[in-house]
Image (tube, rainbow, N blue to C red; front, side, top):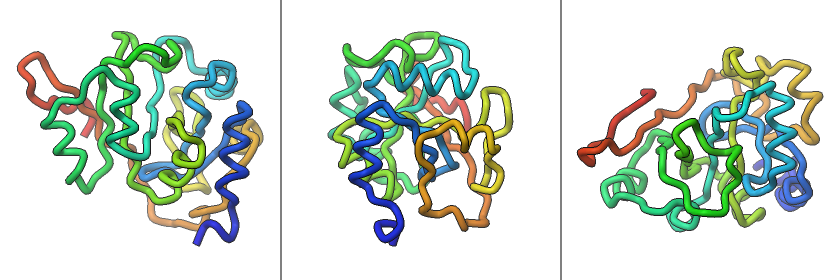
Length: 190
């Protein structure tokens, strides 16, 4: 189990102090930080060379945590998230208090309920959402395995999680959806 090689509480303390980590998610390898720490988000944007206004995905550990960071979760989305087997990122109107740097061009926030046990435990230890963005520079292909992450990215973070570094099966990003004006789920990326 990952707890033998990575100390969740140490990683959570690092995130709490503004650190960046490279970690496996329920989809691809990502770079993460405390989603409420604006300085950490600025460091993340500089490492990725990401211009303002593109936003980031946030990972939460549960639907209950999700509801603390958005204004409303449509009941159909809540049901879908409870039973869906594939990771799904949904765009929401954010509740006040989240940094603007997390929001996309239209002011929405992208949030996924993590299904990976490591991610859930890390988020629970931190007690708030974690930013999740591909462990690559903006505009470059996402890394399907740990071995595809550039040395520049690995050298730019404060900690690289050991868990799942040996996985050889390529991973894909999550599907992304939003509720359209007719209250139908519209997929932006499948």
